[in-house]
Amino acid sequence: MDKGKSIRQNSPKNVKSSVLKMGAKTLFFDVNLAANDKKYLKITESRFTGEGNDRVRNSVVLFPENIEGCEKSLKEVVSYLN
Image (cartoon, rainbow, N blue to C red; front, side, top):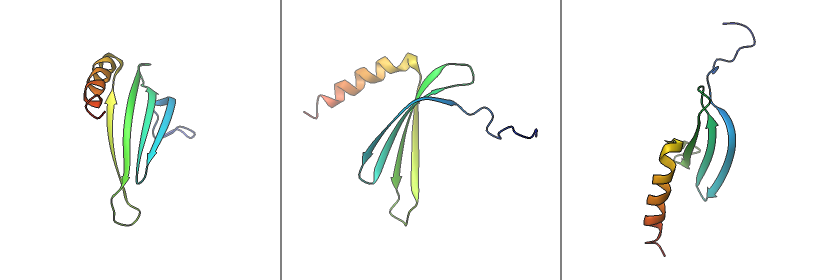
């Protein structure tokens, strides 16, 4: 490997991030730029497992062509909470 080059050479570039803390859980909303210059949304939940300081992370990736459908479905189910 060439000196100065990162091992994670193809890692996505972060465009915008937002964090929502909810007690022992945290949600990360990250808009990233993929290697093909396409943007996507990655939503990551990080939470304590209850065993020491161990954390579990789960992620969902949404591409621009899927955002409208996800937004519609989310609004539909959220309306039942009110």
